[in-house]
Image (tube, rainbow, N blue to C red; front, side, top):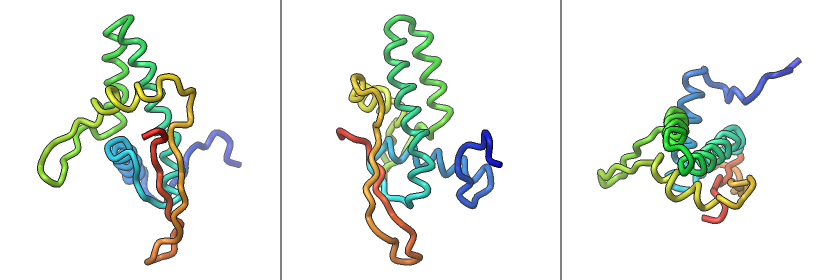
Length: 137
């Protein structure tokens, strides 16, 4: 029985799976649209939505108590890769983008921040590919 067993293993070890999820969620927040396999997209979709909700609550808490806002930022920073280097060498702070651009965009939305578009099979192994994107981007 699979009682209380959450998430998919994706045929990877625990560390590899954690790194994969962290990298995919970071890429989603950085680019706001990624192309990946359907299984990987479904595996990270809930984590991405939870982080956006956490960032929304952190922004609301920041106005009342700045210490709570810092706490939420540190929680989110522990679950994503904060810095992304662009091909031209510039460094982007994904955590700052999440709190300044993405979370305020969904302030009035009660959930459902991501969308899946099926693209078709991948050419090499016919794996089902999808676009995972943030809505209203």
